[in-house]
Length: 335
Figure: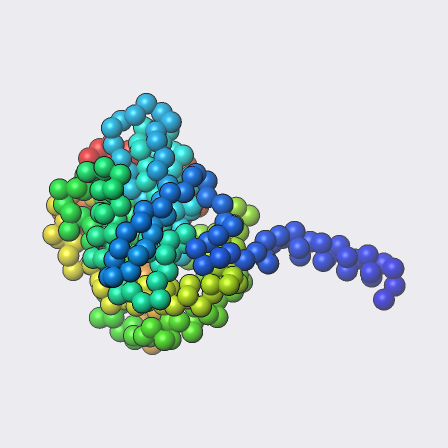
């Protein structure tokens, strides 16, 4: 190879490295070494006979306090940290904000054996809020966090001031529509095989409507770093249990029972449907059609308000923070 070729190869190598500078990052099983935007506290408790802890951020208003508390519930491939922009906006608008990591996720415990149910996660969340003297709150649930927010409101109606559901999954029952059960062992194998490239490709197509910005990469590396770390097996195992919970515990049939003000914030380019890639080919195009699912959910939830984002995907709060947060604050003020 001549000097020109060597120089070109060196330049290409440098470009490849700087494109994804954190590609070799690895984190502990509780996301050790990954920095959150605000101080992280731990709620210590016992559940199913096991001592556990839930990580959370408790951020006080930076603007004039409005007397309201917002609890932010993350999605399956997200963490409390991914609410960074939302925390800044909501605290600036006067909210006290609690952003937590559920058991099995991120900086919280990942037990070797745990029966995951949305009821259990709601109980855990309620216990954490009681421990810091929060009696009533508004819940903002994204993706899987939307399913959890619905379950929480059904179980703890008096403690739920308002719901904001951000591209919640579970707006349809995938099992009833023909998506086959993968079972925990298959989910576990799939999770062990995850890589940064697979995560990035999925997020680009589903979360961001086939558009990409450099600031999204940190969230790819957050997940990939867990998979590269020393706790890879326990992380993948808990993830598999959680996927099975999502698949087997639909909340869509209970939407008419909700009795709290509910705001639906829906990116219409979202196509999320758990296990869709394993479904028969003829069924796949019928799943995860959020342009239809959002409207259907709004009709099923008494008095719901629907806000649609035509050009956004599964994570509108990250793809277009300005438009999303304007709609969120307006909707929460109109309860």
